[in-house]
Length: 489
Ligand SMILES: Cc1ncc(COP(=O)(O)O)c(C=O)c1O
Image (cartoon, rainbow, N blue to C red; front, top):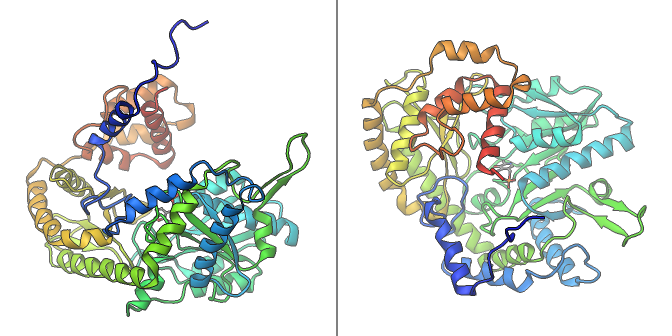
């Protein structure tokens, strides 16, 4: 029997809350427009307070059973109805989920089960451009679907529709296009991919997790946006995250299908146990009504005109940032960013090859100046880059960002280049990640500066340069081990 209690004695609410809030001091700021990934700040007065109050009002409601909590059905029909009105066609039906990953997981399951029922496919394949979000690979792994990855155009970073069409096989259950892709913020040729899929009787999912809400509002604001939603012939499902450019709190997304016949394959019902009859539209069973309520409230609060104005602000931030980046020596913007996402790489000299070490030094220098820009490593001939997610709150920061970027770049150029010992790269290339024991993994992590209990180093450049040089499977093993050491209990 354990002798220590699992928890200390209960304390006053005020003290508990103070301790909780103090934990955030080391976190990147989520408001104020200096964190250019992970957070979406509308910069609107009253929005956070409204979302928090709406969450609280529904926190104890269980979304598991809308017959007991009919408010949940009303809220979900309203939210999905708004998404369908913006991005659907008559007959479209959908589901509120916890995020892009869950929406994608469900869309892949739906396609797999539909293909089994309609086409007798038992060894399904999922057709992906190489820039498709990692969530599709996760879905493929969870659902025993084989991912078939087609390289994107290395110049535009857009999916190669011709190559994707050629990669369709009798086992393909779903083809995917992004609007836009996360990595480079460019919109894939949705109509071509969907058309080729439809011609072969294959479903097509548009991952509009990041663009689904902002793109139609950018169009309303006068920007040119190509068709990408369910109105495009051949598109059969679509995902859109309300916790991105609809500015709901995290845990809010919608997956939308062409019709009820398709959505039916997403649901899980079970009557073969002695408990209550189960029917779960999503991965979750019990779920708080709070996330749905806050998303509902935020949509109502901002409204159509509000979202159009917010989209225009993001576009303004993007225009100014792109102009500044394109005028900077040695900086190259990747592709033609369509919405609020911008990626760029850097070279030692104008027109030179992307320099990973310099790029990562730049990210570290920017972090030291209080900005978070997200490093993305090289992949299959695509250059490493820094990724920025622009939000309305970043508009007022663009000039300061560009000024600091110029200073940081100068400093980064003067620093000792970070490189990896080629002998280590050669050694790593020969390792079998699955055969590595805990001691060997610990040794590699320690070498990378990520030893157990060491915490994160101040500068990530040496770690990321090493990671970039490792083979994909070893990278994945080390990432899992590293995160396992972060969540160490
Ligand atoms: C295009 C795209 N798809 C899917 C996702 C995954 O969404 P989430 O992180 O909400 O699970 C993201 C997240 O950034 C994304 O940008």
